Length: 328
Image (cartoon, rainbow, N blue to C red):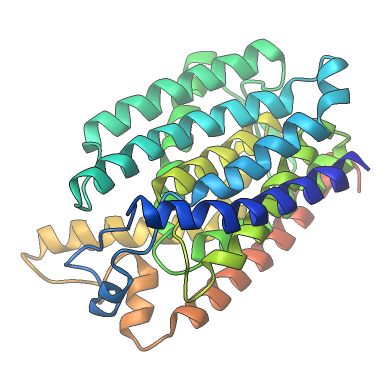
């Protein structure tokens, strides 16, 4: 019942916020600046309100605080800790968006600044989860149903690497109307189902609120988008996905479950490395890979449908791959 309540609260608040907040963003002229080296057809989106991630962040915040009251009173702070981590990541994104809007350029925080902030937050979150008892230095391997113990220090390094990689991969996925929302929705639903089966009420509540917030946001962000989530939203989402994986003590589940994020990040890395090694040649027509398919003639709606479909397929496979952990 609490899961359903969280879903409904998050969905309702996100949609209401959309109708109220998007006009405010327009009046403030908080429009997105489009990269000149991106797809030329994206230039028509110049000026579309950004920082729209605030819509679903508000929905998730209300859902966790309202539907999660009984759990908080009982001493279960899992949903609150995941929300706090996601909010801090979102705050980094908000400052980045603010810098872009203020200077009317698609340049915000410097890469080093963003990296150091995210690294500090990641390490603090891992240590907090260890303190609260949600996380162990043992890696659960999906599909094989085995656990590999790691030294504490090595685990912290590994965890920080996974968090930084995932958060920024989710951020890279946000390049086509509705794409990162459509891709992350099955991820959230998978985490919700896994947490519910395992009896982790805080995690299932947070995941349900996340799924509902994304569903509500798609009402405004599906092509043609009326608002973009900006780094405010995409970094929050990356933080939320990582928070769920680590609070359920199975970060390696992000490999199959986050396959689209991985492909997006790897396509960008491959493109840059090959460009430098080959002195100007490219593997893809444009990176990240969603732009490659756009260059191949795919519409934004087709990119959204195919990538979201792949994410849904791997979400189902992931659920099957960890069922042994839950005795299913």
